[in-house]
Image (tube, rainbow, N blue to C red):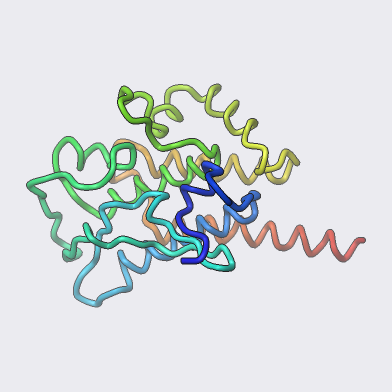
Length: 215
């Protein structure tokens, strides 16, 4: 993919593109739609679980539209079967707790990982630091240290500080919190996430259109 991994741009590594909030919203929706396809649309008889959803596996094309890459850990299963793995795969900081601790795998493990990507998009911070304690994972940091989290959002200068943008960021943060809740049954389905993000983009587009008409 022309622009490489999303992680590179969020960390501003090398010739990274500056990603404003509008662009980050579109990237989030692209990834959500990709996971929705895997979970519900790719096959009539099976569902697929990626098992390694992370910003380094989100690839940006020439137009900065996102696609999910690296399906080496993907697992096929059926709607009524919750597989038990013998070994946890994936990346620290993105792995759902029920999968990391008990090897219980479902689509909601991908939802958790997607929530971590949302937190990365909001803050520009890494999902985890090597050699760090588990409480330094961004999902746990968000849950336990909200004040520090919002300070990091304010420091992410590419996002923007206008009221409408901050309202949108707040809604995505709430969505991320739902995705990263410890109880998998309380996490939304990817189809619900797609609807929320699509609605936020529609609001943005209507606002931009109204602004253009008034100028």
